[in-house]
Length: 63
View 1 (cartoon, rainbow, N blue to C red):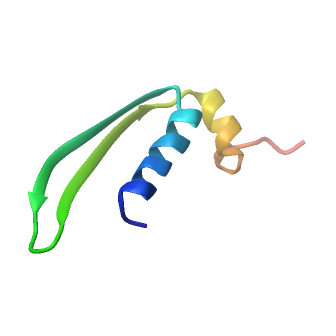
View 2 (tube, one colour):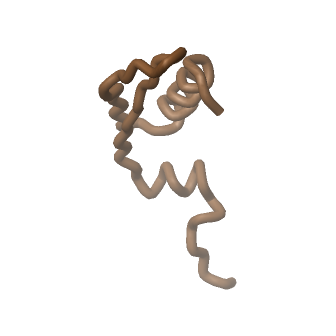
């Protein structure tokens, strides 16, 4: 998904779910009929966040 609206929506979702989030807009490039922006991000995630947001990634011992 492309565009300003989808990027802002993604940032909003990430900021609600990841406590320590750093997003950086890196150099803009002018193309023939558009403006291209690269976006980079760094997130520090705790085990509790992974457990809550991505439970399928957590290893569980058989009972």
